Amino acid sequence: MGDQSEQDPKHQDWDNELLPPRSPVGELGDGERRRIFVTFAVFGTVLIIVIVAALLVWSESTKSRMTAENPLLSESVGGESRLGNIRLGATEMIYFHVTLNGAPVGRRLDMVCEWTEPGGIVVEVVEYSTSRIDKPIWPTHCRHRFTGDSPIGRWSVSIAVGDRELRSMTFNVEQRFGE
Image (tube, rainbow, N blue to C red; front, side, top):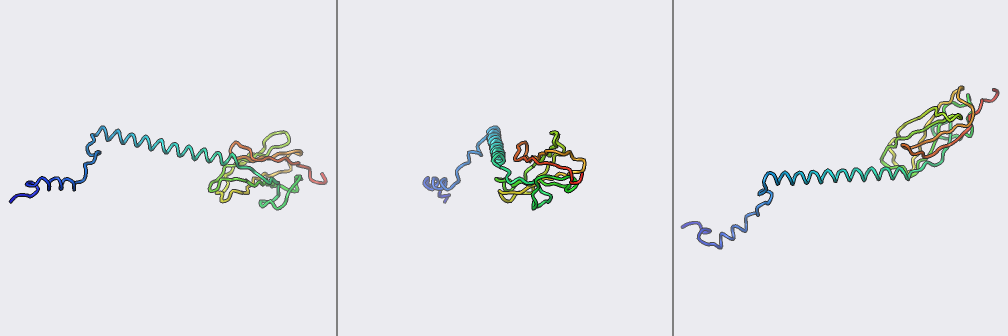
């Protein structure tokens, strides 16, 4: 007696139904496989570029909405004392404090602070990065050392993120009493 599937065509059809369908990829030639691979690679690359561009646009828009509030000059890092005028010899290190409003949480910002003397000459440019920002209201400061040779008159200080100035302030530098 032979195999029953050879004798009964119904059994043979039934056996074929249990076989997995043939994969169309398995039937592709090398050229077709390469074309599919290149298509997916190009699509993946374009998708990555679009995602990176969207993140950059979002990052820049966050920075453009950010403001610097509550500017003050102080002799201390903590900003406890507010200065109106600076008397040479009485104070040396002066801090310019601002509070960033709308700061990008989870990031560091590259800041630029410029101290300009009465003649309009920038005497110091301070570039620094903030620590990682963990709240949208973020205090920051920069500093400048005044000496006995610092020019007397109306000074200015400005703070910027990148090329965008966030806040500036003017103040007077005066001679120490008795001079």
